[in-house]
Length: 204
Image 1 (cartoon, helix red, strand yellow):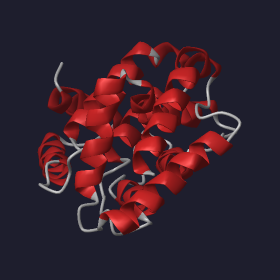
Image 2 (tube, helix red, strand yellow):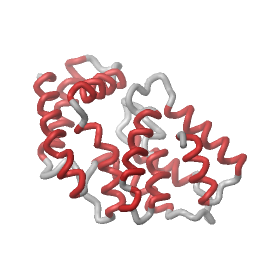
Image 3 (cartoon, helix red, strand yellow):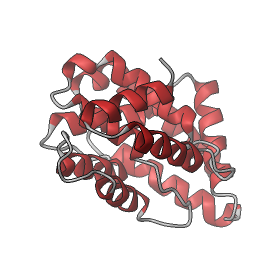
């Protein structure tokens, strides 16, 4: 099942009309296909959905988490610091009152992808980990990832970008854990830390 089919099925299940679903999908596709998006694009959504499918049985509110995956980076401008909040507000706004979905959970889940900190709601921890799994890829794939991020921030010269990126990466290392679920910590924590440390060295 491709992204559009999965999206259409989700929205149909929670109460959207066929016409509305088609329009909403075109909006999603347009948002994530902007030329400025080298990393935060439909490929990132696909990667997160692979995780979602793998850990589907661990989620208490799978529809809310899947909806959050599709909208968590809906609004993304590298010059702004409120992308997650704006994305959460947008996602909340397009959900009708009578929809079969916990709107507050969607809003909170998308907002949580900004700081990536442990949440009392375990489903949100899974979403955060799906978003950060890229940090534990093999080095050559991780390198492609941080080169894509650099392109997204191409408006900034190196003397501004490098210390900013290094600061963000060090923040991950300063936390007790990068990942929020026991599962991801066991599988990916060590690899993610090695990759991040390696990137920081390249930035200095």
